[in-house]
Amino acid sequence: MKQKAVFLDRDGTINKDVGYPNSFSVIEVYPYSIEAVRKLNESGFLAVIVTNQSGIGRGLIIEKNLQDIHQKISDLFARQKAHFDGIYYCPHYLFSPDPDYRDDCQCRKPNPGMGFKAAEDLNIDLKNSYMVGDKVEDVLFGLNIEAKPILCLTGFGRESLPKLKEKGITPAYVAETLLDAVNWILQEEKK
Image (cartoon, rainbow, N blue to C red; front, side, top):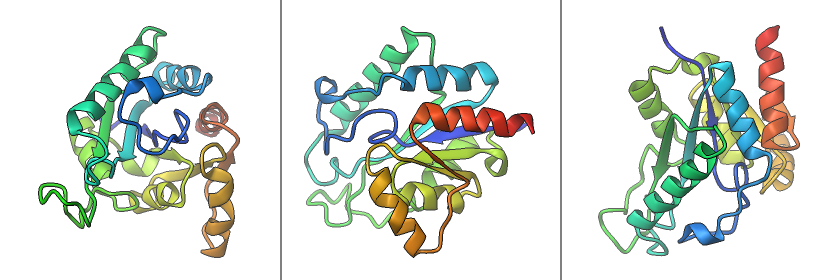
């Protein structure tokens, strides 16, 4: 049977957006994020990070360092009984000096590639899943994979809200924080 997932943007949603972090020491996880992910785990939702990481293609971070950051984030959550079922990232940048990362790809949000890959890997029912993020691209990604998009007002969320309105796009919900988004999802699921 296919599983429901909550796709989570990383920077600005799970942790503060600090630009292009190249080590875990500059990552500041929002204090409520661990509880939010734990609630998803306990409710049977898969928790899946989908994150654009063009810093790799831009030459600002090496892929090994990004993987180290993700391992340390996972370890931090695991120590508090929360876990991610998958972490997907797009390393590409169209103008990358490195031809390995110079790509007009299908995995960079708002394109649906990471969602489709996760759905294949983890047997996800996209139409009964959710996407939580702070940027216009996150909401569009949610729509592109046919999941319910939730805009989080942390990170770039407050700037993204008027941009979405200009485009005539209304998220399924506008959340103050990731925890607020998760609580809303769990309420929706009871209906």
